[in-house]
Image (cartoon, rainbow, N blue to C red; front, side, top):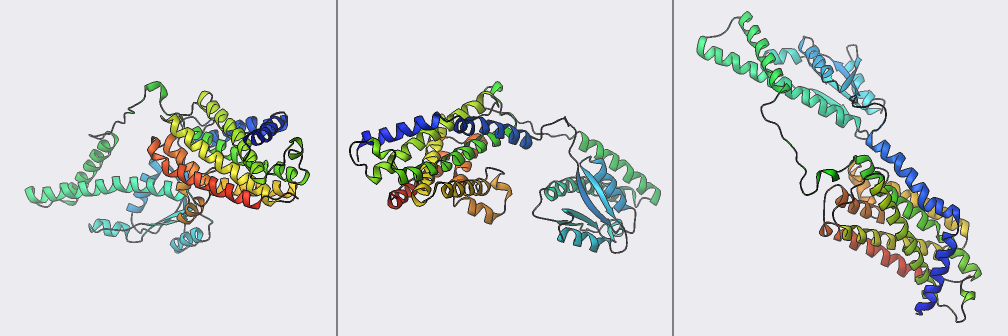
Length: 410
């Protein structure tokens, strides 16, 4: 393999690409635009200020007493949930059907004997129907659980006071028990408002001015950088198809060029362009979007290099297998968008079903995004991304070997 020939082909391709203003637009400008839009969306920014976000919860209150209404009043006072009430003798069945059919994301059913069982000091179970494909049920369920926890504390404290009164002074009258219950509820509400023990979180290991910024850009900046390195890298596959058909670069050289040298040159210049693009976006994210890229630049460099190598290998493989530039571009676009969606670049893989996460780790983007999350969000050092780097290098090696085997001049 002749290194000089590889260098000549790679350098010429880099110069041709960098002279194309449209290519520079997609390499540098468009990733920044997408990063900004995605970052604002993930951060929940906008004109809402600190106003709380409220979520809708469908409710079927089947309780025949007053305690069900008290529960719903407490949920409304939490200022997190809006209640969509269902009426009628079959409201509980209607609530279940609405969630099953996907018309509502979550529903709470209060049983008919709710008040009766509480008065008898028996345990009672509320039914929370949820649609697992929505985020709303997770938020509303936790809000309901917080309210139920407080009401349980009220109930247990009231029972404890009445029990103590019975042990010391005998059973209280109905009026005395009502007064005791009201007093203890007021006491518990005050204690919940100002608990005796709280947890203070201190960020250690970095100066205060480098406090991690809004999580929106912490996700969107690496995700969009990986996305556009992939998108632009794969779209370059059409250039190799043109070279195969026309031998435009090979004719510039005196000696014949072996296919391994053509593949190596294409891998090299794609790696150079992808690396320059990635580090431009990393630098822009750090300076403009205040993204904290972690404490290990070496780890970040290794992750970036391994990912770019995998993208370069896949790009050359597509170009080697394709016989038509337009077909190569179409395949590259479809593959890149699918890999972005499945690999966690558009949304965190952690919120997806287990099967989805498994598929996401069959492609390079899933491993690359895992490594970025380890560095940016979890504070890992080099050792925390070595598995991902090795897997990405495995993809790069496999794609490159397959590209050499598949490459043929037309």
